[in-house]
Length: 404
Image (cartoon, rainbow, N blue to C red; front, side, top):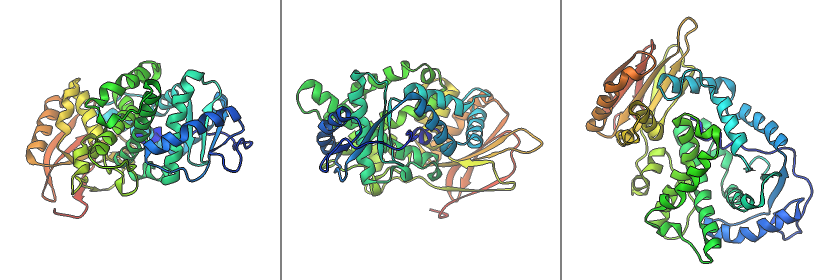
């Protein structure tokens, strides 16, 4: 539930000056920066499968300007009440320590990590004025791909948290994975002096994984964050790049993953063969009905369901139990005279997948911070599970579209 918030648009003030002529690919008040970006754009557009339809605006900003704007964008995309509720959901599922200030944690990570960002609102790419030359080129490459993307689709719209946690995370993976794959290809091609096509590699993760692992360890705030925060922030880059490399390896051309090609769930990103299938494996949408109304309603998706299982067992292998996930929905309740409570309902591809999940969670339910009740159910003919954490009210559930 923090991946979409990670696509925070960072800008400050309107861009000043115009460092390009009428036919320039880049407009900037910094002529040197503009020349560097112009040299990169044609190759990036080819690799990304996108066309440059208008000049890219590029400016430098100070850390102080970044910090002010970051606070404003967090207020917009992750207001305090939502951050509090999301944090409580994670707490009740044992995914973050009690009392975790999710918003403050994300802010510290962003300030530590961000060296530049493309802002769809102003259609401007900003780089921090303290960036060293050795990191400026890969930074420009990655963010220039975002500028190209925004000329082909509405980045703000497809990654809007209002689309739901899982759908927004999947869209973010498409956006960041696309930029990451193109970035690594472009940089490796320049280093090796020959064209590099990462879709032909049998082990893409072995090539790009170490670089992202180094980035995590180089950031104390990120490295010390709970697993769900780390994974939510890094998955769009690593998982998204692996997803797109698989898709491109199985089809001609390099069609960008937008429009009708946008993945609908983290399940599709984690298992590209389900995305590539003639009939895509779309998640079942669940509808919850409760009185009183919940303080927050959303879903985890397969990615965060797997992280939940890993947390219960302390073993990444436990994530495999989430492979049969077919959809989920939770409702968080905050009674005026009681403790927060959660109802989480999921549906599964087959009874066997559901039963293995139930058995695994039941064996470790005592590890949850609040007493819980776990029960197998049927949701309009689909094998399902209801997990109630704390004293939650009755919740009715049905699948959108009814019986399959």
